[in-house]
Length: 317
Image 1 (cartoon, rainbow, N blue to C red):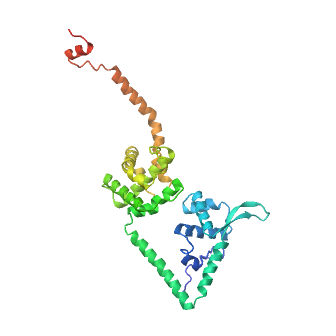
Image 2: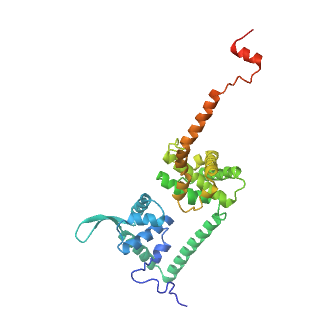
Image 3: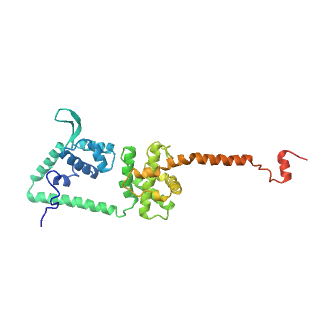
């Protein structure tokens, strides 16, 4: 049976091979999944000489900000996997800063050498145990997210990214935070009993995006001194849901968020209400003043009984 999986899809220019030791030993290198994916993307660009505007490209590729890309690359440097160097062109002019992957190569060579010192059967056994370990971890993770739309998964996979982008720091993960996420979902379920579990998952995301953006832009929740964490969001569940209902009441539910992968389009839809309110502002003010003028011009005492009207005027006869 042929083991040429990709056939003619890969050639010398398009191919990018990942060392097996890097895949199997990424945990020992201290890499989490986000850093591992970014490292592979960066190495591919580095190999093909694509170093100009690299932060912009990687940010668009991973769907995060350039600041997040810079922070993750700096984390890889601190772990001793990349080395920051000045990039100079053929004429000796400085073109910027790049991260040299030579430290990573040296670490992988060291790991490979230590493995080769053992007997062949021990080496095979070690690799098999390593594969079993990663397989078991994957199984545990799948069991953990058995409920695809649970509050814990939402907090780890959805809210954590949104909060990191808004505040520039990672979310806390502890019993208090996971309990607050559960409370947030429970209160949303009480306020929206007709929603399915999937729709509730989306509703929770809409509410989180609303309160984070409102705090940053100085909206309804502009009084918060920092981007609200999950505990504050749980406390403000009813207020957040009320704001979402107001938006739906005015502009209809057809403009609700449907793309959970877009972190900007949903916020634009939510906060387009501000512009529309400004357009209708003068008309509403005019209507209110018209009502006030009618009240002032009306003789509120004309329908009173005659005796009561005399009493109001001070006539005691």
